[in-house]
Image (cartoon, rainbow over all chains, first blue to last red; front, side, top):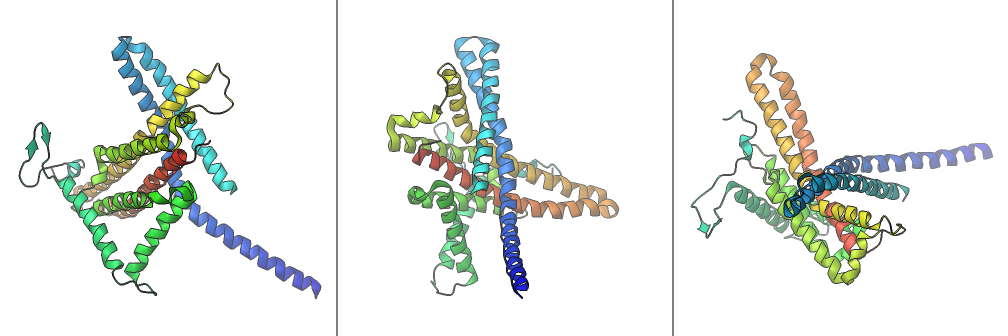
Length: 96
Length: 244
C-alpha cells in the first residue's frame, strides 16, 4: 500500500513539473524571437556608429582613412561586447 | 506603379502646404496615421474604462490587461524605482503597437517603417535616459563607461569601446523597428505582386505564403513594440540603478 501511495505522490510532482516547464517554454518562445532580433541589430549598430564617428573625426583632422579604420575595428569590438552583455543578461534571467 | 513594392512607403502631402521659414510643416499621410493611431488608443481606452465594472467586459479586460502587461514589464526589468515612468512607457508601447497594427490594415500607411520616426522616438528615450542618469547620480553616471576590474593599461581603449556601445543604443533601437516593419511590408507586397502576375494557375502558392506572412507580420508588429518598450525599461534601469 505504501508503495502505491509513494508512486502517486511522485506522479503528481512530476506532472506539476511538466506543467511548469510547459508554461515556461510557451512564455519564452515569443520573447526568444525578440532577443534574437535584438542581438542581431546590436552587433550591426555598434559597427555603424563606430565607423560614422571615425569618418567624422577623419574629416575634422584630415587623416583620411586611418581613424575610420581604427574606429571601425573598435565598433566591431563594442558590437561583440554588446552581444556578450545581452547574452549574459539572458543567462541571468534563465537562472532566476 | 501598383506593383512597385516600395510605393507603399511614399510620404505625400494632404491638404495645404505649410512652410515656416525653411521648415515644411505640411500635414502628410504619415502625420495622418500617427494622429489616427493616437486617436484610436485614446478612444479605445476611454470607451473601455468608462463603466468601471467589477466583472469586466471584454473591452475593459483588454485595457486592464495592457495595463498589467506594461506594469509587470517595468517591475521585472527596471524595478520599483521605475514606477513613476509608467505613463511614458505605456504611451510608448501603445503608440508603437498601434502604429504597427494599423499599418497591417490594407491601404494604410505604416508610420514605423520610416527611420526618421523611429529614430526620433529612440533619440528622445536616449537623451531622456542620459539626462535622468546625470540628474540621479551626477558625475558618477560616467562610471557606466568604466567597468570594474580592468587593468589601467587597457582603460583608454575600454572607455572608448563602452562609449561607442552606449552611443549605439538609439541606432540599434530605431534600426530594429524600422527594418523589421519595412522588410515585412515589402515582402508582403512582393508576394502579393506574385499572386497577380502568376494568375489563376500559379498564384495559389504565393497566396498561401502571403497569408502566412500576414500572420507572421502581426506577430512581428506586437513583438517589436514589446522589444522597444522592454529596451526602454532596460535603459531606464541602467540610469536608475547604477551598477553592472
